[in-house]
Length: 218
Image 1 (cartoon, rainbow, N blue to C red):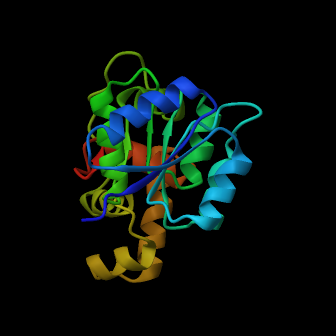
Image 2 (tube, rainbow, N blue to C red; image 1 turned 90 degrees about the vertical axis):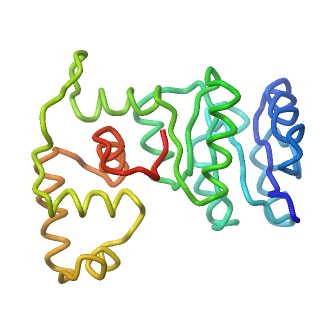
């Protein structure tokens, strides 16, 4: 049985060594390459099929946020998991919009890193709790105290949020709920207005925080 192939893209050699030992040591994954610069990564992707790239985009002179878009342009079916210590909201939103499958920090446990890898290879999402908390606190105006207020959405709107968070596009949501495409767009517009959200990434994070989906992992 073919083992999933992974490319490790990190400017720090010690990080690459640790990830290689963690993943290759399990016997479940094949480390195809280790690269320290974007040019090396792009060259590898052009000549070698990879199931997953593990990347730290926040390394000046090595990788950056735009690296993810370049990966997707060359290898659109290759999943990307971020392992980084960068917790700046604007950067995290940017990489989310670029289509990553997961984001964990370098302070996360080895179990969380493996969970993120497994989720990405299954086509699922995984964001560690720290990333979720930071994004929600800043993007949704979350107070320091836990907010237990009920969701302001109607049952139909909750259904739409749940399906959107699973990755369904508007036409697919319309088919599942037996609604017109126009109705789905109208509901989505109202949802974004009610929740004061600006992007699909924020909508997914809202759904995760409210427990509206079970297969978007945190």
